[in-house]
Image 1 (spheres, rainbow, N blue to C red):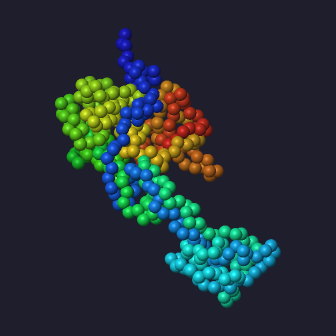
Image 2 (cartoon, rainbow, N blue to C red; image 1 turned 120 degrees about the vertical axis):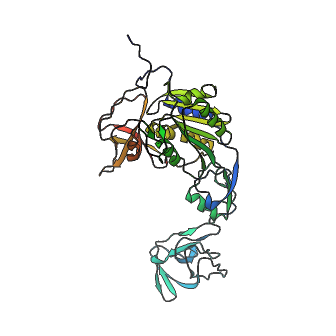
Image 3 (cartoon, one colour; image 1 turned 90 degrees about the vertical axis):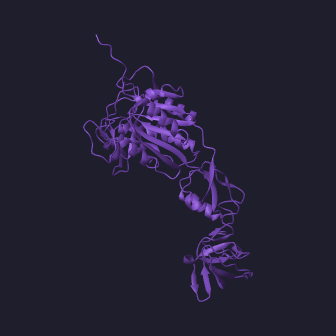
Length: 420
């Protein structure tokens, strides 16, 4: 009788660790970069802020009108069920300062953003009054202080407005400019080396030989890592040779912060990446209870973090976004970033699954006519079917304790928005 060996089809395979445990172990081991660089704010979008930003001024700097209209003193507002007529004493445009006192029963024509003349505290929107020559008439619908933006009501001088660890978005850049800040310190870019491994992997620039496959994994990773806070070091395709693999990784570790390879980390006799790295006790080889993406290697080569991802194209992307990307962003010091939300959606189909491992399927999320979020899979979910990722706009995340899904059941979906 043949005794079968443990495989990826076994839910209770010996040595399996949970999706959650693998992710926590990786994040616990990752240390943030210490080095910063000074950068002009117009170049700083999508970078990690390396310092707290203290407001040097009040925002607004001065009390100003929120609308085009007429500034007056609240004491001149009409009593209940009365109308009054005021004389227009002057006009103040944005950027101008009016220093004369406003006389009783008078008002100042004022434009949006213009500084409020001293002594005046209320603005009547121009649409809410009647003008005749140099006079305006107003009724009793108005309240003291309306349509006035007070100095410092948005931001007070001396307060922290952006915290260290903020992933800078366009609004943050505009905020910095509003303080007159032209340069800031951000975390330096992360240097990430990537490689594909295997004798069967072929460059896309040459005709494909029989038995070979084109190198899609490295191009997927190149695209996934194409962001302003990462510098990519492309190691190319490394052939199956233990000494060459180990030398390439050790050389890369001298200048890279992170190495990501794909392929060769399973249990087969031809898994040269695993063989090359097993001599170094700093690399852990895990079998994670996840589909796709069961075999993963993680650890260190010298002071460089190392991720060995599976060889199948979909498994590479799933493990990158679920394990590697959170680690890279922790290493970059990012603690405040728009999240890729996990939300509930109604499944439009039955989805087969066995309890005991996390499954991350590729899905298409849409909204019904009634506004309800719904999701369907992209079809066949094999770990080699890269089109399932190309068609998708979300991951369908089925937890380890979850069994098959019936049409109409709610499932967790993670939108690609803010993830890619």
